[in-house]
Amino acid sequence: MRVGLHALGIGDGARPEVVRAVATAAEAHGFARLWCGEHVVLVDSPASRYPYSADGRIAVPPDADWLDPLLALTFAAAVTSRIELATGMLLLPEHNPVVVAKQAATLDVLSAGRFSLGVGAGWSAEEFAALGVPFTRRGQRTEEYLAAMRALWTEDPASFTGEFIRFDAIRVNPKPLRDGRLPVIVGGNSDTALRRAVGHGDGWYGFNVPAADVLSHVGVLADECTRQGRALHDLTIAVALSDGTPEHLPALAAAGVSELVITGTPPPTPDAAAAWTAELAKTWINR
Image (tube, rainbow, N blue to C red; front, side, top):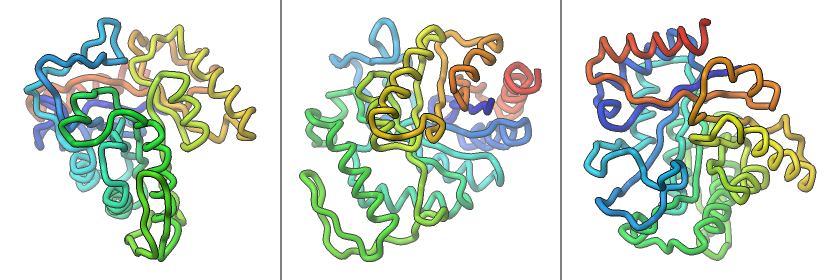
């Protein structure tokens, strides 16, 4: 099973020297992919419930540094040559999809085809309000934006007419390197997000999932694949566990998980961050 690392962009993981140290050490020690998440806005007292913790609160302090994931991964791409890169997740409905299509394709070109675009619909009403984007129907907006972006990646000129975005005979270049294809991974642990992954993505990323729940989530994906005429093995399935140990790896592989993502915050100095990454690899990869 592939093992990815979700550790860049927040707090001490936002320091450029730490990003460099973690990225290069992760590549050297066999991690398959670096993940980097997004929040444009955090607030001190959110009313919105965070869906990835039992208490509904995000663990990141609202005053922590949080890098833009596309820029952070571009930096990581520049100091590596083999390890894959993915947003985990970029909150797509908060953005202009024409701009994101260009940014994502640019990162794919600069990384020599190593980038996958992980997207989510978002959960913070306060964040959407600050950005002037309606919180309602964000799922439908996400799906339409993905369709529009795929048109931009594969057509030249491209046209699209939807409810939330429309353009006519425009050219957006560069194109992604893999014949105009850029893998899209859909995040979220709800059944709605799982159905969206099958209907609109090339993979699914479950975040902070209890190990006991993985099989049921994969079952929802399998049922939806059957309903939509897709094969489950055509999807990449990446999971970050809330309670994972290396002993879970065989069961995850048997369930169809293709990538286990290790989450954590690196130490604040480059040497310590590199050693921390190496120790994670010893625990999870080179056992």
